[in-house]
Image (cartoon, rainbow, N blue to C red; front, side, top):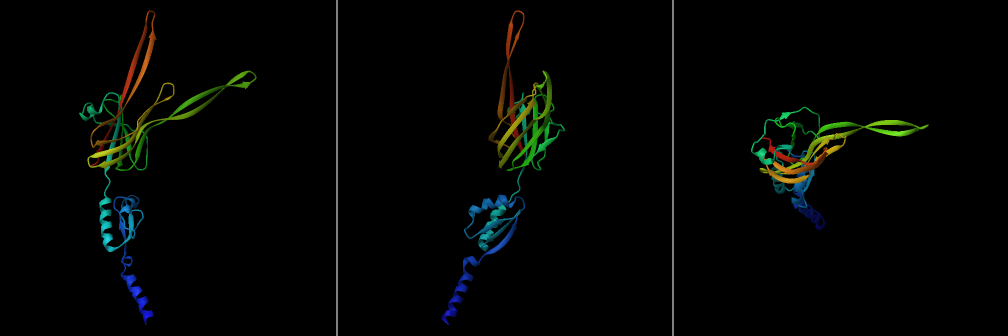
Length: 269
């Protein structure tokens, strides 16, 4: 008789144990994939909790009381990501203070040029209508917390000639053409915190020189700014000296070229 009671007591104990009082539920995600939500909640789980990501849903195995807590946490994290518009201007005659004051800021005129864009992000090259010769501008729309880049430009053919001895005392010329890419754009990773945005940004601008060489201007930085405000993230100063001579005198001079790299982030309402 005792041999029959002990197994029965063990069975009743296992059924009443916390490990047996678990439920399993699939929680759909509306805005963010499970690969982003699961790492955020994993440190907060009990050792007996199990959460498995599956695309835009999470499979949760836990106690009924814990299930309600985990679902409430997921709801707070599964929020809509903000759409941001990021503009970068490389200006030779305007500073961030002047742009914020509205000096020389007219409606931008889009220029239809091909652009190479990461993923499904759309962007376009724009230039200031009043300062086409001195400002270059790129505008990119992306989601907060998502890396993105925009690149505008093209490849330029450069011809190289090689002179060699073909034999019998004669020279021959061999010509080859290589394509060099000259582009303008920027790579960015924005993180939003209320009305503040933190940017990891790397703008660059390539131009073909008269001798076929690429002239490059670039910067890389991490900064925090307010939405809607222009901020100068760097200044490039180029100095060159010139020398000229006449019949009776020698003239020397210097020239300084200053490029202000400005950025603005706006939230798409």
